[in-house]
Image (cartoon, rainbow, N blue to C red):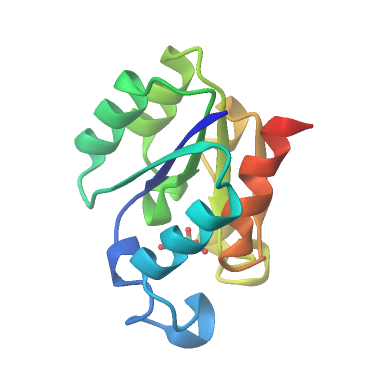
Length: 136
Ligand code: DQA
């Protein structure tokens, strides 16, 4: 299968920021582990802090499934929500942390409704679990 892993705002600081929440590994290290796990599949990786660039990545993706950690945009970006709703490619929403055990504002996702499903709380393995779901 062909997957596109999209990481949004501040996810480039993974391994540097809030290590107790997001772990010690960098996004590049996590992506390398994802690639190794899906060695028989094609994995693309994209990260941006810019909402519009994330929308463009969703619009132009040519793959079987998108695994999206939109970061804080999850909680308020109607633009990303509309981009997901505009394409046929299924999107699974991902969070490394369990957003439901954190601050109240993280309990709201404006994108869940237009995603195929949601995985959260499993650290870097959230990405792998989300992509595996496309194979079921
Ligand atoms: C996050 C959770 C979001 O609330 C937060 O803004 C992030 C990361 C996660 O992976 O747990 O940047 O999406």
